[in-house]
Length: 389
Image 1: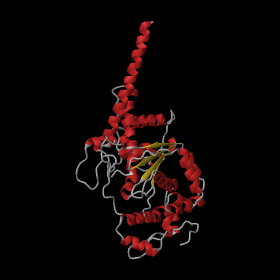
Image 2: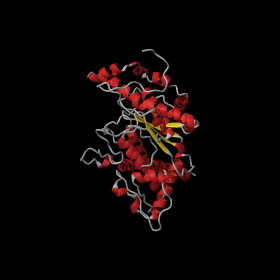
Image 3: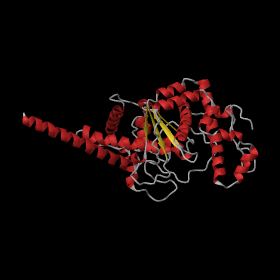
Image 4: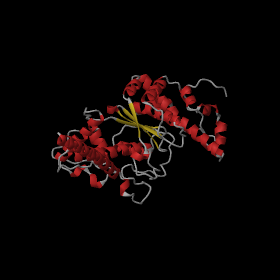
C-alpha cells in the first residue's frame, strides 16, 4: 500500500471471520459527552507510556489537580519517568493542537498498522504466535483509543481551541507516584489500576496531614476524625460539586462502596465536620504555600482509557474522567479497591495494614515523630545557649 499522509481516520480492523469491527461514526464520537481536558490528557498519557518503553499491555495514568498546577504520573510497572518534565509535556500539548495524526503515530512507532489490509488483519487473528497477538493489540489500541481521541481533539480545536492553552497553564510541575508511597514494601500490586494508584496516594497523604495537624498544630484534647474516601473527594476536595442547601434538620452524609465503616465522618457532629474542613483547608494551604484552596478540580486520564470498574470509582468520587471504551472489553480479571485493598472478585478479606487509612496513619506518625524530634533538638540547643550566657 502507498504511504500517503494520514488524515484522522480509523485503521482497518476486522475479526477472524473478516467482518469489520464496530466503531461509531466520527460525528457520534465527536458529539458524545466528554471532558475536553481529559481527552487531551488521554493522548498525553499514551505518549508518556511510549516514552517510558511501555507496551499496549500496560497502562500509564496522569491526574491533574488544577489548583496546585501539578500533574501526577503513575504506571502499574512502577516506572520513575526519568527525564519527563512539565515543559516537555506542555510541548506535547502544542503538538496535539496541530492535529498531525500521522506524526503522532510515527512518534509512537504505530504508523505501520495503516499498511495492513483486511485479509492481513484477518490472518493475524488466526495465528497463535506472540508476535501476531502483539500486532492485534496494537491494531486495537490505535482503532479503539488513539483514533477516537484524535477525533475528540479535532472537535475541541473547532469548538474551544483555547482549551489546549488553558490545560498547559495548569501544568507547572509534575509528581511521580511510586509503590513506596502506596503500599508496604514487597506487596503485590496486581489489580491496583493507575486511577486507583492516584486516589489512594491522595487519601493516604490526606490522612497523613490530618495526623500532623493533630499532633503538632492543635492543642489536646482535639482529635482527628478521619472521613471516608468518598467524603474526602466529593465533599471536601470538591465541595462546589455538591448541593450546599440541605433540607431543614437534615444532617446526613452519603455513603459509598469502598468506604471504611470505622472512619465515617457522618458519625461526627456538625461542629466536628466543620473543624475537619478547617484542618484540611490548612493542609491544602501548605501545598500552595500558605494560600488556602477552597476547592480542587481533579482530572484523570489513562493511556488505555479508563476501565469500567475505575469509571465507577471515579464517578463516586466526583473526579472528572472520560468513559469511551469502544472495544467493549470484559471486566478486569482482578480489580483492587484502592482504599480497602479488597479484590472485588475475591471473598478473602485483605490485611488491615494494607488499607489506605492504616497506611496514612503510619506515614503521618513517622513524619510527626521526625518533626517533633527536630523541634526537641532545637529546644535543647537553644536551652544550652541560654545556659552559657
